[in-house]
Image 1 (cartoon, one colour):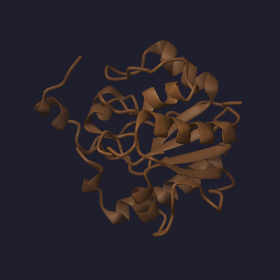
Image 2: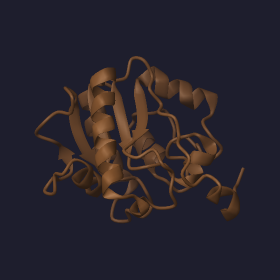
Image 3: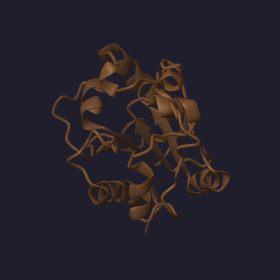
Length: 188
């Protein structure tokens, strides 16, 4: 499947449901959905996004999922079996994350805190240090595990897998994601 620019634009402002398996061991938090993700309903679906290749390189998932046409049933089942969930700081789909407003990010931080308190994952991994700094009013936060948990969960701020984050490679993303997966008990 592919989409024209006009077809994708029709998804601007759409929301993508959270992926929340039971049990939920690791909750991965994107900044907000891309238009491609909104069109397919699969998190990190945009072709070229390095999320699934990095998870595979880290040994977290069995192979690099291709979610460009939506989740394949076996891939979705694997995420559920592993207890890996996905949500976003801001639910609204945009072309680029820089279209978001500070008040949306701050509201997203409050929503995430409530979601984590309710679902109680072992680990929360926020993908994007700049968005984390803004959403949680922590201007000096750095990548890695944060000193304070989020609603009882260990909190990691990790690099965003977007191709726009060009200084990160699949290998560097994989190393970061593996650290959080180990903390969640998904990787040995």
